[in-house]
Picture 1 (cartoon, protein in one colour):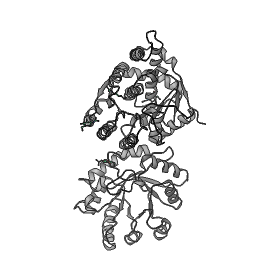
Picture 2 (picture 1 turned 180 degrees about the vertical axis):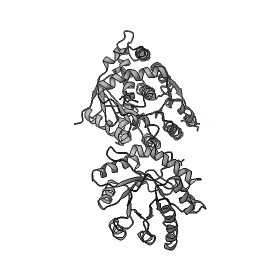
Picture 3 (picture 1 turned 45 degrees about the horizontal axis):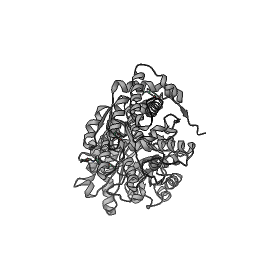
Length: 521
Ligand SMILES: *[C@@H]1O[C@H](CO)[C@@H](O)[C@H](O)[C@H]1NC(C)=O
Ligand SMILES: *[C@@H]1O[C@H](CO)[C@@H](O)[C@H](O)[C@H]1NC(C)=O
Ligand SMILES: *[C@@H]1O[C@H](CO)[C@@H](O)[C@H](O)[C@H]1NC(C)=O
Ligand SMILES: *[C@@H]1O[C@H](CO)[C@@H](O)[C@H](O)[C@H]1NC(C)=O
């Protein structure tokens, strides 16, 4: 049997809400013309006679396009029409029984939503797994099965160890706006999804052929926010090499003056705008989500700061996040006080499901919240830590690997990781903890670096950290700095001075950098 192409897997739905008054066979044929690579006929309500006659018509068109047809659940229907296989759910006929009836060449897929189910299906001889549910959908409201990209990734990791060549597709509410991120973020180091299964994104589309060809294009193309990083095959791995690259990032900022588009947090607006200007960026404050589509095209970066959360604000953030993801503009997430209240914890979840964050920056409590560890934060302050440096580094690395992005955890020692490279940064000054908004403006600084350094997000975060924290060290040593009040203007001065010096080729300040790779062995 020829290799099955799982790239774009169409699952049919004949309910009027999805199909409308159109003819299913015609819709499927249009989708095949658009490039669908596999079709599953799914109909839970029609009686057997109608199932068989529709399946037979569908098989005629799939054969014409050389695409396998699978039947949902009904092995008898598959046998009756002689199609290529079946797809079975957890409550359907057992895999071994289906195999016995259909033979070894049939394609048999199984729906799984946990590691246990996935491992069992692989051992029982499934050809592929439909892994989900990715997102809640109107038709499937069983939220317990919503596993997202993180759950999908853990399933992929678990089955990659079994040494069986079982293919995987993600299913559940995937459409053109989420597809690339689903493939990118679900990917485990040793196993990636082979494709996506879609229902309404094609069946309910006005033009199923066009929808299919657009989706297929998206499957084959890296997401805009990851393209530069994926293409960079010469990323530095050591602290020394990365530090050597920092001046070129800062210099680039000076030349390009990237936009730092800020959303929210009214507490430190003025300070953040001054910092953005001092490090060489152009600040813009715009909380209205509709504006983001235009702003995202200006080559800058977005900072989403959860300083204040309202349902209205969340909608605006989600809109802006999607716009920047689409334009490939970096987005920095600052989950301020993420663990403080139930509302904030829910907001963190909503935002993580709404789009891709290139960088997540927070203190220990905030990073723990984003990871999903239950923490009770007092206000937005970091509070005392009970974790060891190794535990913090591990958490940062694991979150970055899960989200496939860069995570920065601030503290007396900062940790930064992209899931593969993890560094401890011991720069900064105690006075930074005595002024309001110092963490927030670090987010602004990193966003500005990220805008000019898409080829290595970890490098951009490191450049932002070093620029900001070494400026703080230099400022704190100035004779005119007597405490937090005089520190703030001095910090802004020194951020500016470092930008200027670096642009003129003077990088002596970087000798102060204290960056060390974390050894996990
Ligand atoms: C795409 O899917 C997501 C997640 O299910 C949903 O929130 C969004 O509204 C969908 N977009 C379109 C255009 O249907
Ligand atoms: C790749 O990453 C390195 C740093 O790790 C950086 O110096 C270089 O500019 C990046 N290359 C591209 C093409 O982005
Ligand atoms: C910029 O973003 C920071 C968060 O990083 C936020 O606190 C501040 O209010 C924003 N201000 C401006 C002027 O953009
Ligand atoms: C979000 O955008 C709406 C317009 O849709 C605007 O009226 C509102 O002020 C914004 N909310 C926040 C919290 O920024």
